[in-house]
Image (tube, rainbow, N blue to C red; front, top):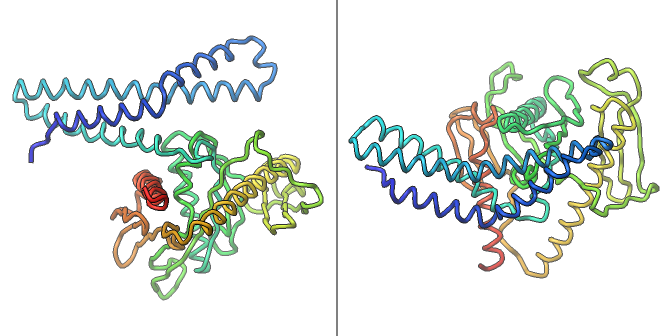
Length: 372
């Protein structure tokens, strides 16, 4: 079936028009101008932390601007390529145009998804915690596989990550791990990954080669900012220090630098051990604890509103995604029906299609709940 390039290109232009409207390119350009003025201030580097924040924000804003403007140019180039192929009846050029159309369609879709992230904390960086669930050593191994999956996803996008805490299981894998992705919209994207993940495979730890089902939980919270008012009285916090465990450098395993912070009223526990000093681990633990308390507060408010509104069928199920390696190969999201027959690629960080489907599913569920 021949590709209707005219219709496809028109659809791309319509979508990009919506993206520009939501993004507000003029405001983005004004932001870039302001950040450039700040970065040109010779006294900026008197405060190195602020200077790094300004330069990072400038780099991100320019990249966002270039992606939008550059996409318009790509669509123009695609249209020219199609015209050349048609005029010259060149099958090779037409095939090239079809390939470029698919590439542009995917890139425009990614930009469109960004415009759907309008939640209160969607613009925030994210803190992700993965915990092994039922399934013994297989579950601990699965938790480590998920950690690698998300770190590879971030690496593919050039997102900086920082592993903040790792608790190793005795035989293999991880009891839990916490890491940070400090880029805008990390929370908006990864929040749809929160829930229970299930792995089905022949267990490499079972000497009888039996099939094993194991589980891991993924928690995603927005990173706290100084403007957020989450004050925690000191008498509500219990702090324990201990010696770090697992692989590490010279300063790990030699001093009581790891910190376990417990919020007494709620029982929330946060552990940090991957910073070099106890002070750094304490600061990191407090920031994550504040983030969890902030999210808990919002969840309680949302639950109260839900109770007042009645039962809404838009909840996230306990098992939100299955990764099946035996007797067949498939990864399937149970909420969105998004699936692939290539688990190897998924575990290597190719999860954008699942994230995009999750964001669209969440938006549709929210609209349904609101009666739109």
